[in-house]
Amino acid sequence: MAIQRMDNVGIVVEDMDAAVAFFVELGMEVEGRARVEGPVADGCTGLKGVRCDIVMVRTPDGHGRLELAKYLSPAAIDPGPRDRPHNILGTHRVMFAVDDLEDTVARLRPHGAELVGEIARFEDSVLLCYLRGPEGVIVGLAQELN
Image (cartoon, rainbow, N blue to C red; front, side):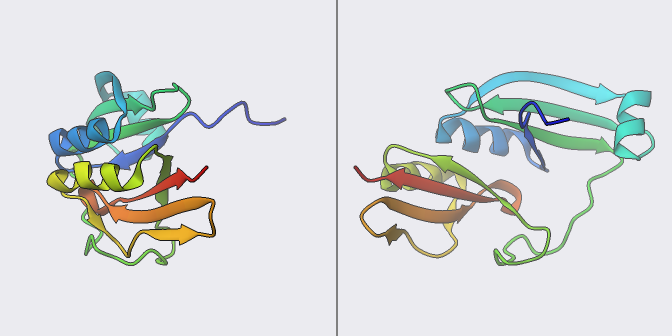
């Protein structure tokens, strides 16, 4: 049996408004908002008394989605410093293709985005960078050079 598709990537956030604003500025669209609680939420998370607000955002092409989750109960656990390097086990990044990498970085800076390293050029084919977004999430940006 094969998977059908990747449905979404989940990100737990403390400041939902800031996270939504960041990803909307990046170009994602809010698909929906909901409160999740009850036996199904408890059962699939392995937690008791789950009450969580979620916002689903999607890429303009409709194929990529992020589920932003703010736990009301039980409280979210702080994993420690949010400026951890990219090579920490279990730490991942979300990568987006963009039209204009430098413009995208400039638009995201007022939303707290900071470059992890620098904008790098791979041969004559792509510009790449990692930036730290809301809650310390590392977001990758790639611009194809034609």
